[in-house]
Structure formats: structure tokens, C-alpha cells
Length: 271
Image (tube, rainbow, N blue to C red; front, side, top):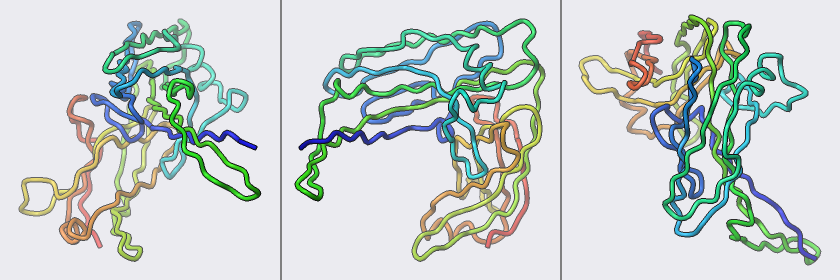
């Protein structure tokens, strides 16, 4: 007897930055974050960086951030009115693409917002998922009772598509910065609090006294409007942990492509 099992590997936009490209499997997507704040649409470019043809399906889904930064998928029946509105406002084409090796393809994204749309931020996530038959790469694994399972990886990338209406503002604050050690594993941990009607997105930078270059920097840190506080941690090596310990300035800044504005800053002692 032979069973089929799909191993789905998802790429999330909360860990990507707005001007870059994101890859999962052999699919490259750019940009990795779309913000629509007017009537004009935009486009996303897909590129198959493999040596064989591939087919991808494009769809929209709802994802909701939790306090740990996870993006949990939300079914349409459990959507809030704002989430359901976001799904209805985004148009896109094509919805299925066949890509030859190193062949780019644009996905056109449009906005169909009602005239009476309340001010606020709305968001969907666009999913680009490989269609399994296009990539017949399988790995057979023997299991109990003589059964064998064929594992077919299905690679996908998700990016946020954000709609903003009105003069939306948000502020943030950094707190509880510390080093967390578990055996040989070390993480730089902190909390980010957010207030306001829109998300924040940018990079975390750690500056040490007397040093011109950051001792640590991480990009693509988002806090979406559904959470007011996010706990975040970054794996680091022992040398970086030693360099970070002691007095430090922690900054949360917009990405350079968005202007580089300071979102939040704090002075602390990292222990």
C-alpha cells in the first residue's frame, strides 16, 4: 500500500523587508511587502530560479499575529469585519503561473476600496504555492506494517498586502531586553509595545558606547495592529552575546527604503 503525504514549507513576510526578495524552494518573490495607500495598484514579480519548469498557484488568505509574532491562519468564517473587508478589496491576476527556468512573471495587484471605507489599516496575505505535479521530487520513507509514504515538498511564500486609509499613526516602546541562555544556545530577547491605528515595520539595532557600528542588527520586524505587545528573540552566537552585554542603546527604526524614521529608542543594560 502507498500513501501520499505533503510537507508544506511556508515563507512568512513578517521576517522579510519591503525592498527585498524572498525565496522558498526555487521561487523568488519581490517585493516581500506591499503597502497600498491610494487608488493605484502595484505588482509583484515571481522568478523561478531552478533549472526546470515550475507551476505556482496564487491565492489570498488571512493571517493574524499573536504576542509571539506567529502568524496564525484565519478561516473566512472566523474573520473580523475588517479582515473580511480586506479580502473583498484586493484583486489580482493571474492566479496560476507556469514559469520556465529564470523566467520572471508579474502578478498585478489592484485595490477596489468602497467610497465609505472607514479609516484604518487592512491586511491580507498573498500566498504563492508550488503545485506538486510540477515538481515530482519525492522521498520514500518506510513506516510500520510495511507501509511506505511518499513525501512531496510543497514550497510556498507568503507576503503581506496592506491597505491604509487616512492619516494613521503608531508609536512603539522597547522593554525587557535581556540575554536568554539555554545550554549552549543564546538569544537576544526583548518586548515591543505598540499603540495606534497602524502597524510598525523596521529593524532592531543595538549600539554600544563608543562604537560607531551596531553590535547587532535585525531587519523585517513587524508589529501588526491586532497586537499591542510582541515578544521577540534573535538567536546569536557566544561572541555576539559577549559584545552585547552591558550598557547599550536599543533602536527600532523604519527600513531605509521607508525613510529610516526612529520608531522607538531606549537606554538599557543587557544582562
